[in-house]
Length: 563
Image 1 (cartoon, one colour):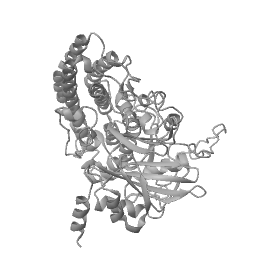
Image 2: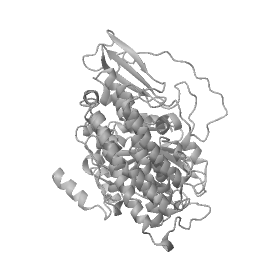
Image 3: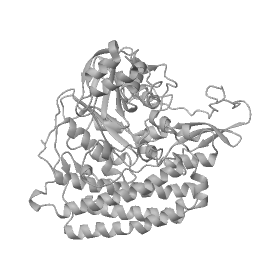
């Protein structure tokens, strides 16, 4: 039977919702499957620790599951597990999980990095925090904690009271031993090691970029993260589903994207606990989320102009002005300008501010300023020769490279990848609205800027439609929260991974319950984490100013990368 016929039959056997069934997974993986598993949102199979790479590659090639969106490691009383959550870039509702158990005495599993490059950083994080080792990993070492750190903080046996001594390491040229030298680069001659960061300017947070130059050409780039690792996942695991976790998401991506972050957690727990959200609350959530997207993109555009022009330009000041307008509306809605804590499990905290008519008028008035402002941005950026020379044909990211790194959001759409969870895995009120997913084909720094500019206009259109819907909503049907038990206790060992389209891309949450009112495992899938991982692919072979422009184009927030 030909490979084409096999793939057609496999796709025909998929269930009604589009996801491959467990039977499909077993047909592709054969005797690699040890047993079936049960996840809330995706079929799952268990494979042996020495069959990881081939299993992932088979599902990628034969079932078109070409997006490794999340890798989660966790500890049980008798074992460790690594879960690879796969999706289809063309249809993210087609998803599956591959579960890899190991013994707790010797947690060693094969690496999946040969199938998906995004597994590289995700597995390093699992090794760092839980001590799971991955054979044949290209570079298995700590990623968030210092290399001299003792123990693994997410293990049950970890002693958090034990003092740690972190020694200062000398800065060494990573090409000195020719371990990663590219063809034609001479590691022993005419190379210079350059530290970019970890100070804040031009790195958008405390990020250290280890850079090696051959003359003026960047030949090696290594993002060094973890400077503000704040144990967000561990703190969420000690909080209760119903009341204590929701304030934390605002702090992951604090650059105006708080409601988008809150929605990621809300979607996960509402899926795990089978909680419905009233339609009226969905509209409010959608409006607030898009105001956050506008504010976040405006900050990204403003600071990017600062990166590229190197001074307080008109674009920086205009961008901050328009961000403030969006934040003003969010303050009216939520009472806060950044740490909103407005979403609740099953809805939102309260209704629109009164008088409603004044709020609607204020929203429309602020949105009316955007068309003229967007014309100014296009004139000052897209039509500017200096900006063009710094951004056109620099920081190029190829489609297939972006996919293997799990890149999402404006960075992916700037490479022509038509992937947006608001449309492709609908939630909230988006499927009832008229809007378009923005893509640009060129995959360079300029394309990523153009995507964000156009997305601001699309978000404004979404907000207008939400205001129209809310204004005409029947008064007796304005329910802001569903009837949620005061204490949420999902069934023991229920598992789910749910995601939303955050300001930077796919922001996902993996949850596993243990029958109590707090999660046994809480894993944050940060879009910035995977997007930043792809930086070397975009920057190597270019010049230092191009590196700064490329890094800025990713719109990275380190609080979300380090978590």
